Image (cartoon, rainbow, N blue to C red; front, side, top):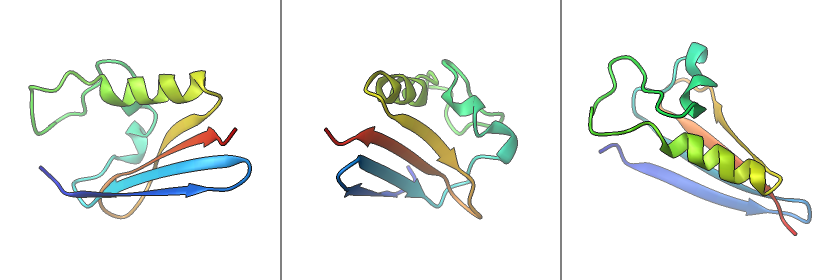
Length: 86
């Protein structure tokens, strides 16, 4: 397993949760695809994963008025979830 880090930032309008690691990363061509249910990138490390986690994260965020995205970076993956801080 690749170690990851997380950060939570809040202001009067938004709560932002960011998590990142320094694994193989997500290619630019797959930044949106990783949020599709059952999507698995080519060469995924483990076949035991169903490809549902990020799809569920985005769906939950959107149902609460927020968003989930994957940000491009040099190495590793960075995922950002924003939610209204009501």
